Image (cartoon, rainbow, N blue to C red; front, side):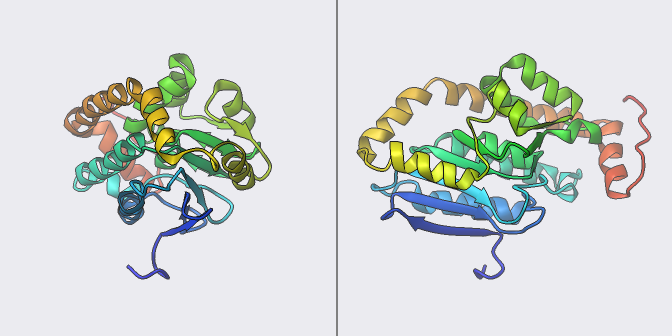
Length: 258
């Protein structure tokens, strides 16, 4: 894929110690198969570089991401899409260096799942976060695994079951967002420069492993269970398929509660 048509911009800075990943399909920055593939390729190519100390993921345009492709959630494509997205989440969870995420505007659905797979989230106060999947008759598999350890079970259930959106201030209050800043990219870069840039890259990797050696296996095990629930049970239900079709056809869903 040529750089001009790529949905992701990738570069190194800070003498190769910081990997920059930028979603580059504004304004929606949809997390579709092409975006997921580019993210996985970039992580695979760079995460093991000995001098790397962190990754910074952000996005072009006013919004981080409107979410995943609804077309790719339909029954004929959802298994491949879900396994690919969850592969990306697993690779982010296994990252040997911290993943910083800078967020503006809308960060919804699959976009929030990708962001929540990172470690430190920097966001503008007026950014919006939500998992609206339930309103389409489905649920957010990765978020069901990533949000409870980040924000607590009760707050995660609120977001996952209501489909409502919250702003950066509420996200910061519940622990979803680590740092609020009018310029989240600049705040993330400042955090890197002040706290990470002068550390031993190899010792930092041991510290990341030590902090995450228990939580990452638990999240990945739950992700396997939730993925099976989604593909084998949810997608066999009437309402899940009806909700997705209704969204694509721009009409109200006809729920049959089955």
